[in-house]
Image (cartoon, rainbow, N blue to C red):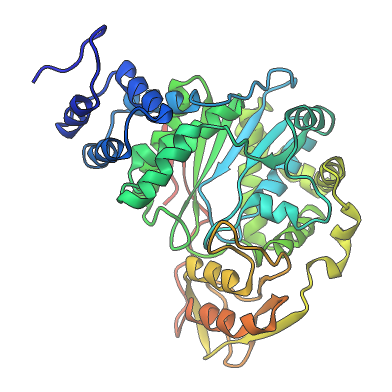
Length: 449
């Protein structure tokens, strides 16, 4: 069969057949598909067929890179050049208790690397960065472009909601993928994530690819493949990109929720907090500083640690909250993250916690009111979980291992059931797992396990 050549009229049915047969698209063909789908000239049934062909046949690195940039160009592209310095963005593929954005952005900005962060809201078991920030009274999470730029120039960091017209092709395609069984395709996941990152305009990108029970990627090999694909996309499109593969087979830190997680962010930024959250935050921040031109990676680790210990990163976080209209005085008040109703969770038996189903822990917080089942659900910002014992810890039957909290007392029973069912307690301790499994750059993949 002869397919379209440069200058020929293209037909979507021929392009579907081409991909179905495992052949690679040209950039012109991909542009034809995406542009015409966004315009409404290609119907959903043909786009669905093409997505399924991609699902089964895959894409080359070049195809995926071209597709991603075309998706980025389908809407608004942010030009961050008026902001001096190397702008470094960070993206997490989503997890439970993952509040690192606020910690690392504060550290990095305090070191002189500007962070212009556009984030999303949560849906289902994973929390949203914007929801967590919005738990601070009066904070503005819908900054206009001028205000966003001014805050980044003045403070060094700002966090705002994503533009409604950022990569509209991705929004349309994701909605279709969601109902056609084509979500879990590496090229389609990678292009979805990276199209928004490219459109957001940063000079360099750090990717935090989660793996485990609370992540979309369940195996290390799949997570590495996704990371390598996204790093290749960034490299092909002129953005220095690094990816870390991090553990999400247990929640990160001790808090799950919105105000609860902000309270834990403050604890870390003031020199305390759980060891796992501190370690992962330092590792992520050091990689952002490396991308921001602050020296060799080892030097960036030292710089990040020193900045956190000095208190300058907490001052930077307070400065950002104030600049975005928030009441920063509440951050050090215990009542900020306290809900009306609280319940202790007791260990059902003696032993060691050998596994925490992180997704199930997230769904326990969701049942308490900390998340959304649908996009229109209202949040209880103070609902959440404080975990006192985690994977590897010894527990005694009847010992308090967590506290649940909510503004609605009737949610506590379901939250408790879900949380207890998320834990596996056995007689012998588990093998200790690292927090970071691998680091991926354009030069290759370094595995630590």
